Image 1: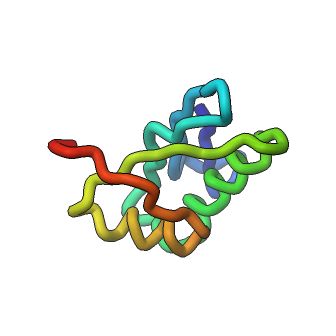
Image 2 (image 1 turned 180 degrees about the vertical axis):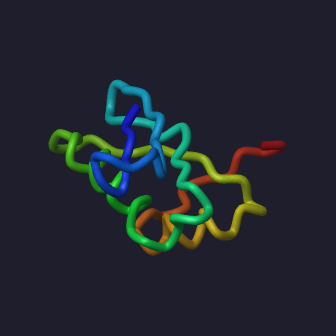
Amino acid sequence: GLWISSTPSESLVGFCFKRSLPNGIEILLIAIDPNCQSRGYGRALLASCISQLKAGEVIWLEVHELNQKAIRFYESCGFLKVGVRERY
């Protein structure tokens, strides 16, 4: 996982859990303290994941259709909807 704090001496503000796949990585969870959201921490964690990709690899993730905040975040980062899992 990846962890982030606003400064080395401050408490944790967010984290990302991911796992390796044969063709890239899957983001299992990105979470940012609600008091620290909209400050770029989520984008920083996502950028770190993207920087670890090799040529031709991709990032997979799942977001519940009711989680519009997360959907807007990922779309604003260039992610595209490629499918829908029934009864997610």
